[in-house]
Image 1 (spheres, rainbow, N blue to C red):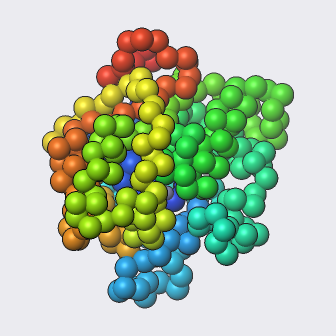
Image 2 (tube, rainbow, N blue to C red; image 1 turned 90 degrees about the vertical axis):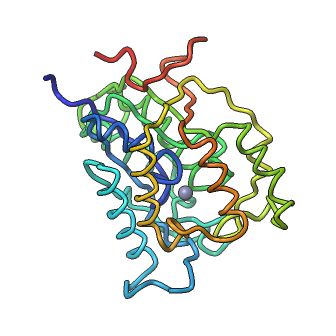
Length: 286
Ligand SMILES: [Zn+2]
């Protein structure tokens, strides 16, 4: 038995760890990998379902509690708040809030992630793709900061105050399969839904997601158990509609998730990908 492998996911909001790549995180955690989630914001700008904030003082408090619940279900070793505020969508008031991730200097955000990488020493780092999944500014900002931090952590001249240098082995971006999203966008109008205004907050333009076709360099097949854990973790995010089957687009999404559901796809940013598709993010790491 060697020392446990370490995986760090850097995401923007409470729920990105579940709705994105929750199956993969659960699967690695169950296999004995120490999985950490560094979450840039507390999701303060997300709109919540009508039941309100369930006795929490703020939306941020409630969503952080939901994240803690999901993290426990997924088997994560810990969740770390990077210290920023949810920026909402561009043009919104939240976007101009002084504590928002959108207003933070990118070098400062990267520096905080460097500190976490140097402290936790992950073998593998995962973050959002360059387009932020569906163009959410926080996803894009988190992507940019994590990429910079990944390379800076290994350079002793960068952020010397953030601890001794450390070089993780691999960097991945989680992406949704292109065919899946295309099918979703085609099906939605049949159910009277507008694919340009998807999600609880009606701020997700799915048509933007199908403009770019990403290559995948790693595909993780999820076990039935990992999918069950992901569904259970989704139920923790009740304010974001997790765990309930609602009419309309969420229902289509659930049906498609079931059809697709057994795999998560990743772009490998470092080391540069080869033609061979990986089946394990820790492949090649001793
Ligand atoms: Zn998010």
